[in-house]
Structures are given as C-alpha cells and as structure tokens.
Length: 553
Image 1 (cartoon, rainbow, N blue to C red):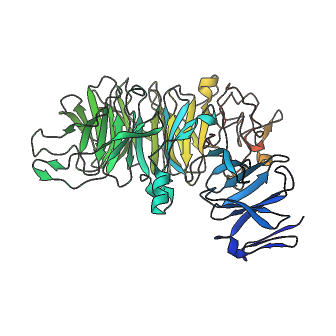
Image 2: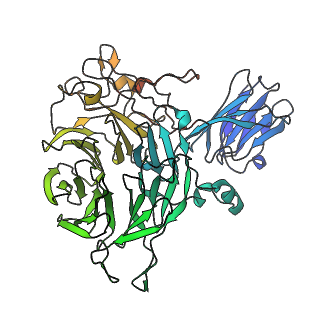
Image 3: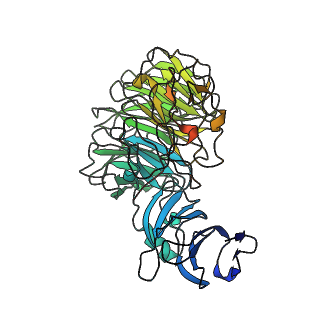
C-alpha cells in the first residue's frame, strides 16, 4: 500500500482514496496504518493541531477522531501489530498509548509519559536526593523521580484544563506565570504546605503541598499598607523556607523582606532597618537572596544594592551589614557552618562568615555572567555555572578550583543532592534535566588533580538532531565508549556516562536510573549508543546523564 503525504495541499492519498482538506483544520504531520489488530484495516492521521483522525480504509469513511490528543503537532504514529493499541508522540514532549476497546470503536487513553514542554529554568533536589523539583518556561511545576519514571508527576494548579476549556484558551494561559525562584523543606511535609515559589511579575508567593502534588491553600501576600499609607504591589523576587518548615520568607523588588507562617499563611513581620512606622525597608534594591541558619537565630539577605545584611530571626532587628562592592545576584547559606557564598555582578564569588560578618574566601574564574550557585552538604565544595557554558567546582577550605567542565551549552540552573553523589543541571534551549555522578563519592579521588584547565564534556542528545556528539565520534577504551576527548588522562569529578536510558524519540524524552536501581521489565528500549555505560580504569561507576522529563500514569 502506497501512502503519500502532501502538506501543502493538506491531503492524504492512499492508493485511490482521497481525504480532502475539508476534514482537517490544520496541516497534517504524520500517518500510521494497520491492517489487523482491531478487526478492520484502519489508518491514523496526525495533524499539526494535535488531533488524531482514524479512517476506515475499506469503507473509505471516518472511523473516529481523538480530539486534543496532544498540545502540539503529532510527530509520529505507530500501531502495535495484532493489538488495538496506537502509540503517538508529539512536539509537546509527550508519548501516549491509545486503545480502541470502546463499543463504538473510539479510543481511550491507556498510558502516557510527558515532561516539560519548554526548557526548565529552576531545579532543586528534594528530600534525600531521589526527587527533583523542576519549574520550566511552560509554567509547569514538576516533581521528577530519579529512580522510577512512574513516580514523576506535575503538580496541580487547580482545574486548569476546565478553566481553559471554558475560556477557550490554551491550558498554559490559565496557569501561574513562570517560576523564578523556589524552595522546599521536607520537615513539615505531612502537616502543611512545604514548598514555596516566586513567579515572574507576581506580587504574591505561592505555597505547595508536595506530598499531595498540588498547590497550597495559602498565597503569601505582603501587606498593602505601611505606616498608614498604601504601597504599590511589587513582584516577588526570592523566597525561602526555614529549616524547621514553619516560616516562609518573601523578598520583593521594592527591597522589602517579609516573614509568614506556613501553616496559617499569616504575615509575621517585616525586616526593617529601623523599627518604627516609617522604618526603612530591608534593602534599597530588589532582594535577590534570603536564607536562615539551622537554629532560627539569624537571617541573611542580599540585594542589587550590594549589601549583605544579617538579621536577628526572632526580633527582626539588623545585627550586622557588609557592603560587597557590587550588586549581588545569588545567595546561599550553609546551615551548619554559617558560611555564606554569594555571586556579584563582577563575576566573583565571595564567601562570608555570617556569624563574624567578614569575608573569608574569594573565587574568580568565570568569563561570563554566573547563572547558578550551589554548595555541598558538608560545606567543602562550591559549584558555580555561567553563561560561558562552564561548571566550576571550588574547594572552599583550600581556596582553589578543583575542576572546570566546559559543557558547550550555558547552564541555567543546577542542584547538588544532599549525599553529594548527583548533580542536576538544566541548559539553555534544552528540555532535559541532565544528571552527573560524583566520582569522588563512587570511588577514590586520588586520580583527580586540581586544575583550572577546562575539560570538554559532550552533552548527550535528547532527541534526533540535538546535541553535539555522535556515537561513532566517541573514543574507546577496552571496547567501551567514553564521554569525550581526553578522559583517560583527565579523570572527571563529574561524569556523564550512562547505565540505562531509553532510545531518543521525536518527543524528546529519555529515562534515567540511579546506580544499583532495579530495572523494570516493561519492554523499555535499550540504551542509546551515545549514552551507554563507559568502562576503563579512568571512569568510576556513575549515574546516567540524560533527560528525566517523563511521567508514566
């Protein structure tokens, strides 16, 4: 049977059968056909609007239509032999299985797997490091599991599908705006909301019940009046949860810093430089970072005004302040050591002692804007990423750089697991979350020599045509492919080898697994040649580097 697809004329020719343009509202994108399995010969046609149309070939009639099967153009269709199951993939980063078992011959959704429709821009390891919180430019908030894809889910923002249908708009338009900052604490997971997010252009911070995968009942709204006068709403720029999970902190673009009770959502005070009705706000510029220590004694905050201010947690009184000399864009606070690293616009990372309010370390090396900063749980490592495509690992006690990885694609966000074994990164124009294993945890670090010489690391492709590496281009050691040039001579602290991953598909979905995680006999495809487990004496056991942007329901 000869099938011809003509996108320009919006028609499909199948032998002598002609399905005219009037049957479709958008250009066709793919065709799949089956001669057995559901009792009759049928042909499935996918459209650019996400609609799947099924035709009866013998009767030359329309069999059924799957409306809104996908939110983007259908990329491919495949009928499983001798079964009434149709698999479809789409540009919206989803793969779905449809089964034709209804009495009227229509199809219902059997299984599906999906992820971010747009590149993620904010990630954070949650709990013990087996879950990753991810927010993307598609306005979606996901919790991904690094063990099993079935446990990955998108957090609910209410009845967005019903609202979108009622307003006749796309579902993405009724969701909250893009997340710019997030924080979470596992301590109060069973009691009340234990996640908090700041959204682009929104003057409220939103809480999330991560246990229930849904938005919380409270939106944290800073007071609209101060000193007897009204205040213009100002967008929230940063958020933070205390180590106990009882308090949420909200910093705004107008320089104000507020504290809320997470259980009730009530306002519990504002941090001001003067404790009176006309008191000055915490900062003269937008608050870019806020953090607390493990004992709820101190609160630190930074801003574009260049000041690092240290406050008393209970009394909300300013205790100390240090001027960094330049605007500050990122802030961290290690709960155990009170070490406070921050990023300045001069491409310098400064580490302050929050108890003594003095500078203790300074790191330079990035050549472009620093986009992310992370500190290890033991306080010995700093990891920073910049728009120059590099990730640098700094040794804080020694005051030197341990290793520099040149990834070739700018990193937008990174997060290190509490066990320090896995690093997660997101990149510009990539919908995947890439996982890197720490070889100093899985093996010995004797072979890692501190060096500022960049090591080129090739990112694996997450769909056909993406990425800068081909399987045949990778060097080999003892018959195994390695990640990139120079691996035997320059062992990496962070490795990108893979133990198990699904073969890349058009929907840009890959699956990953942790080392030692039990496999599942679910008919999954074999590992892609470009991301197989590497061997040889220079590579230690490592977690796959791939995309964890899936969910299986």
